[in-house]
Length: 354
Ligand SMILES: [Zn+2]
Image (cartoon, rainbow, N blue to C red; front, side, top):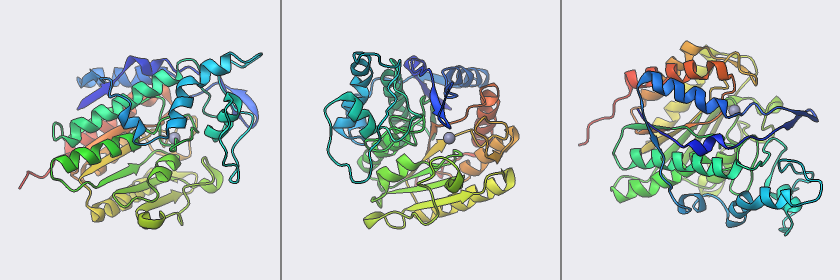
């Protein structure tokens, strides 16, 4: 498996976030990257440092104001009197609040949907490097250079919208990968159609929002029922896309406590829908927080179960870009990723070109 990593993804070290109003350590920590690198090293995977992809792929997904905010917010916040070590908003944007403020406190409220996306000193460098990993993996696959590639993205990305951070996410790496792939597919004369399949335990609300009105990207998500689970206000079964995108979003929420068997059955259903869409390429938002012992656990997936997940995904026989999302049981992350990749590579074959 070709894998893309960047050491700057270790620079994001937010001190805390709020859980039921209490400051708590952030489970999305740099040790996750080392656990993944250990797993890739043991498997003998080829790990490449992602080159700087430039600003264009990020600008194709995110707004100019939001990108400028992410890049400058920490330094501007740190210059405020008595500021906390990381940007954490104390105001949030409501649905009728449409004007854009000039100060960093107001902009933090405008661009941060919750208090689980603190911006610390290294946050921008880390998420920018993670976006380079995603673009590198997308280019490797969409140009026909590799049947699949894995991007070690940290922080994760699927809760980030066009101009909004949330849930440990800042830039939406899966969306960047899909958007980058579309142009490269078209250049090869292939139909510019991509599917994003999100199997993290949380709904990929940012990805859904970015592609909500699009019919060239089919977004499918299997996740814990948001009635009682983050992100609460998105990911419900009735959300199916809007405008041209109506019918190109599919949400398959499952109850808290869902077993491995039921989760994998829903994954098969999602993949069948993707097969009917007939994309040229698949982007997988790969979270391991469906693991039975994850700190944010809602499902009962075991380590061997991730191997079964890999086999099922690979059975779609699509060029596949793997984007790392969540997964916070750091001591099990290496084993869970290895299990997935072993299962995936045992099955993954692309149909030969006509
Ligand atoms: Zn998650």
